Image (cartoon, rainbow over all chains, first blue to last red; front, side, top):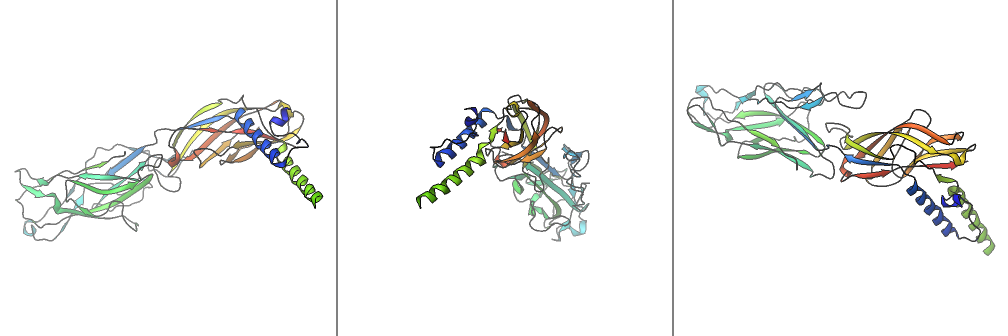
Amino acid sequence: MHQRSRGSSSPPAPMSRRAAVALAVGGLAAGGAAYAFTATLTAAAPKTIYLQIGNGTFTGGNYTPIKGNGQPTGSPGNNATINKVSVSVAAASVGNGTAQAMTTDSTAANSFWDGFAFCNLPQQLYIGGFYRTTGTGTGSVSVIATVPTSLTNAAGDTLPFSQISWTSSGNQDSGAEPFPAGTFSSASLNVGSIGQNQWAESCWTFSYKNTVVPAAGTYTGRVLYTLTAP
Amino acid sequence: MRPRYLFAFCIIWLATAAAHAKTTVIDDSGTLPYNAAVAMRWQQEQPRGAARNQLTGTLQLRVRLNVSAWLRRTGRIYMVLPAQQPGAMTAAWTTQGRLLPGQLVPGTRALVYSGPITTPFIEDVVQLTITVDGRRMLQTYPVNFRFEMDEE
């Protein structure tokens, strides 16, 4: 009977309970196979990374507030600005071992998450980003700093990059920082990591150790920060 | 004792039969699109908070249920999301009023219509939004839905 095949008929008298239940379950399964619309889920461009050292760009505002359609207000963009961190050491103080606080020309005090004033300018440099991927992922991705051996001046004199170090914090932050304190102590340096599907941010306060006496001049060097997702 | 056992057996057997007997899968083959692709995107572009792992996708369906077998009778229609991969997901939908809006998780069903069946087909435009834990999206997943009639 038609109804029986959908598990809706009255049970025949001689059938055992176990058999009847089996028939009912089997009937529903068969019906489900016959009529079932399907939505095939495909992850669309789900892998995303964003890294901001100093100035960054969000188009349309911060991420929050969330709009009525559930979408964020702003979207991350590209910013080609290369920010500087610098200090001028008075001649009388050069090499005296007293660390010199450095300042930045970055104007990024606020987190693009919500506009919160996270870093204090000009003392602190914003570093933050996120890593998006589906699946179990690799757990986290690291930000790698590629560091020259030395800073140089116009005359070709050098100053070890290891003279520069930083502390890490953030307004109203507590606990460990995702981008902790460190020193430019090697050519390739892991300066922190971002967990899968997480936003991570810190504010770095740089200082110059001032334990060497270089030739007079303006010394510059560029550190390249790279975030790579597998 | 044997007659008593037999009596109890009959009660249980009949109760089981009553619970399952009038549930019938509805012919929804007129639904368009019947096999739809849903692009799943991050619910939040930036990951923060409880929804940081969620992917979401939306699909508009023209649901067409063949209920001619129950014409001039009364019934309850449920939308069913059987337990299946990728597991942790939610299906929520809005309608244009013929069917009820609602939401589902795998292994459950939700009432979308209750009342007299007065036409051979019940049709509505359904905006279906599926949300899934992105960590479970290891591949493409076909997710099957069906409609069931509980005849009163």
